[in-house]
Image 1 (cartoon, rainbow, N blue to C red):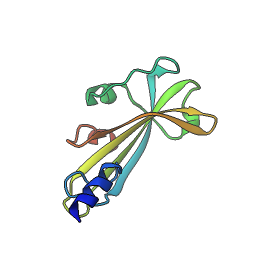
Image 2 (cartoon, rainbow, N blue to C red):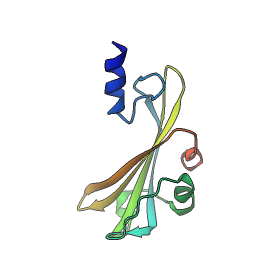
Image 3 (tube, rainbow, N blue to C red):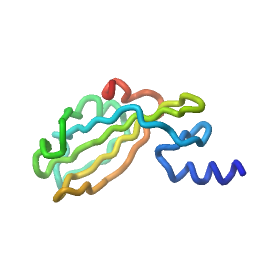
Image 4 (cartoon, helix red, strand yellow):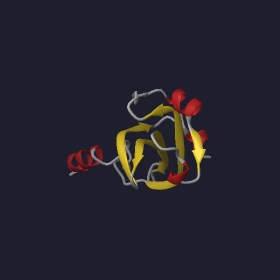
Length: 115
């Protein structure tokens, strides 16, 4: 039975990587990425890049046209207390989000941006 839970957890960013339990959302925040414009997207895996380049915005309408955005969501496991931050990088296009990539940071690298 445990193998099915692990397989299912692999496809859910909001499931704990330690015990494969669905996690609870603790915080959410939206950021603009002024250094990233349409047609010039470059993937960054380093948390330092996000700490230096993200700018807080209150809503998607505040993001200039053609600029990428990043939504950060902090999750915590109710069973083992493991914490994860999901970074979803997207381009807002006509009331929709064209997602470029989703990254998971499980070592507290981006916690300071959400607290």
